[in-house]
Image (tube, rainbow over the protein chains, first blue to last red):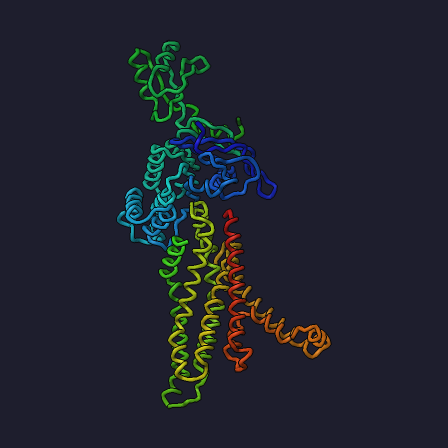
Length: 305
Length: 266
């Protein structure tokens, strides 16, 4: 099955300076892919290309199988886009913002009113419906903008640094909403500077550096489990544990495992419990080679794929 | 188009600025009437003639030539300035609908301005001066001029990211057209006394009609038609030609603006 968002060989340059140099990325339905990278890495350019807002120079972007260059209007019916700055008009009331996008999505009458009311509830703005959008907090505007981008039931949600400048509560609320959308089957591409939040919400992460996709991988991070011995038995127990994607022995004198958890597995607790139940002595468990480490390695030039 | 039109009107009529212009316009008109016309009426002077509609026409025409391009220029540049344009462009809203909705909302707003002067126009029929036909011609001309000026503003707006720079550019463009067509008419008019004028006449081209043809595109030509006592130059044909010229310019600029919006990436 093809991914909901497919980016192949995406290339673009501003004034002769390459910003994207052949990026390949796929976001399957129901998955959140976190896009991280330093300033100028090309994250926003990639988002704009996927949102039909950039006449990119090379490669292809397909949304739900629709080529964004050949059929931009068709692609726009399949994407929901939340730009870096919350795209809501400050001179409209909160409900009017939603009502506009609901009408644009083709909703009418009682159905439109119901969907707008539902969206206000989800955005936790039911009691602020009659307030000018410009008077809402940044977090409230971001949630409003995200709901506004969803009325046409897009297959792909593009979120360009949606939590930038939000307080912790607003950030959590927005990320919960993102996760809920993914669980409803929407493919989400989310860019952020905050590695911890990407790791927390994304099923996979992609590190963009110097216009290239330096690495794509499991956003849940990996775990390092140090044992007192019996490495082979520990490998077998860990491989049989639920929520484990890959288990490898760590090279070195200390007997240790490297675990890669499957999407949806919160942490290594279940694996550790199985190891302990099997009578194995676990000395230390800690995140190993997580997003932060991979990001540093890429950005500092340690490695790139 | 309808969702965009509704959104624009909601925002325009909610903003303080949206009400400030019509209110100031109405206040200036009322001031003019109170200061110059009513005293004359009260003492029973019958020499007011075209003074009232003249004051109204000048204030209205001046306001329109500044306000209409600004309202048009604020449409897209304002969205860019607020950071809301990208979300709108990436939404399923049709680009034609976006352009048409914004144009229609701005034009309706300008028609509201024109409508404010209607009571004074009716009042002026009672004070003498211009006949009903001339006033009707002028009001229709103002509505069509508003359309052309709003379309100018919309087209200019597609190239700017700041409302005020777009507004200055749009008003400047309208002013430049007024000056250019005015000067061109003067220059062509001087041909009548020279050899070129004679050659044109010999070729069957009247310089008077050439001058008139250029002035048809001048945004201030409505005043000349309103104030003209000549039954030919101020007659129905002249009004019709001026209306058609404004309609043609407005339609061409609207199509151009829609074409630009359809191709805009941000």
